[in-house]
Length: 445
Length: 129
Image (cartoon, rainbow over all chains, first blue to last red; front, side):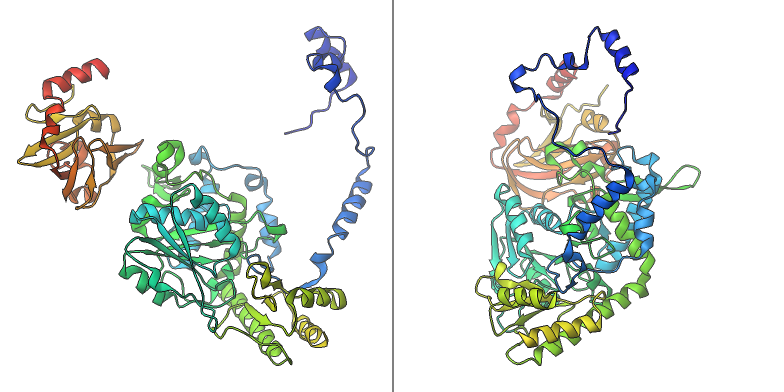
């Protein structure tokens, strides 16, 4: 909403027209005893340099942003080329809302189409939607979709799916009549266990890869077991840079791929706004939630973009819609699109390579330290669990206080019994010197 | 004026039924296909699924809307018209023939007696449509 200033003359003119003596009279229907009879507690007006100075002071309080960090666990520090932020701030993109009159917003539909194409290619799936709110809601929508497709209700979720994603899914299924069971993990490999819980009542099995411990799951094996009983395999990906290196979930037999696209050039922003990705097989497209842009040609053969299969959506299908999501995370999806198109195939592969090489280096160096070990044997991408000689929370607190390093996440936050373990994340933004200082810091504790 | 065939039974939800023994063939009426417009997709149940009378068994999607298909009679689906997956336009072109949807082995063949005859359906349409 715009601020419209009024001069005293204009105010007097308007009051005269409506027949009032003062602006206060406009509020005479509000009882006097509930009226605020004092000035608002806000500072005096500031000049522009003063405003900038105040803002800089506030920004300087955010010391965490300046510290060396090895914290991942669902939100990742990656370098975003300047062009991403520059282009998304063009007013055509920055100020527009979801295309309610799609035909006149060809530019918006084109980037949505490009986003869908990129997600399809990277996940190895046939169709992807225009995006969801974030990774967790994307996963919960996949549960509902799997139940529609299979006409079954039970969903099996690996305990190594991001615990906050599971919490969001619980909120969804509580009111959807979908029983959700968790599957434990192998203490040695960190991979999902209990696949024998799959039965002919199971709508879907949900596995994250790389999982919350950073371990890459054996998706093919899970897919085979799921398909043998007619259940769908839902693959969750929280670290979207991993698509640059790992075999696609589609090739491994996934039926639905969901995840978080924040790693594609989107700032961490204290946890959001981010962008959910959602991809599936063509044969399930009518059960997919969310918007879908397509290419069409007019009668003169000119290419254009349209919203398609909109009959799945709630503005047409009401309570029978595939989802209540009727919009998408437009601006963030645009940032992801520009990031991926700037990096290109080779660029994304190179970033992914840097992540895994740096993480492997850190993992090897930490494993050499007296009293430290790597509890899970499975190959990892850019995150791995470290077992410390002492309590993880205390170790991290000391590391922060004495070395100014954010060392990672104490696993006990989500897995109570794992109180000596830290989830460490190393991305391309961490230098070798930073990794060495982390290792030194851990050593000296 | 809608095409209404006298040898069929009709529901107020605009489905038609033709009975052979204890098996009923179900489709949507000419009035329904006309109201929906160009049909682009029909979602049907699987053979072996069972439904009670008046339950939704699938949906018809046209360029402007999606409507549920209700089975006027209860029973087990014994055959599904897979051909309309590839040719959904047959629902528009030949709703009483190639555009049929499912065949149901009826639990209670008497249920069709409660349905409308062609004349009654025509009266129903002129009173309500």
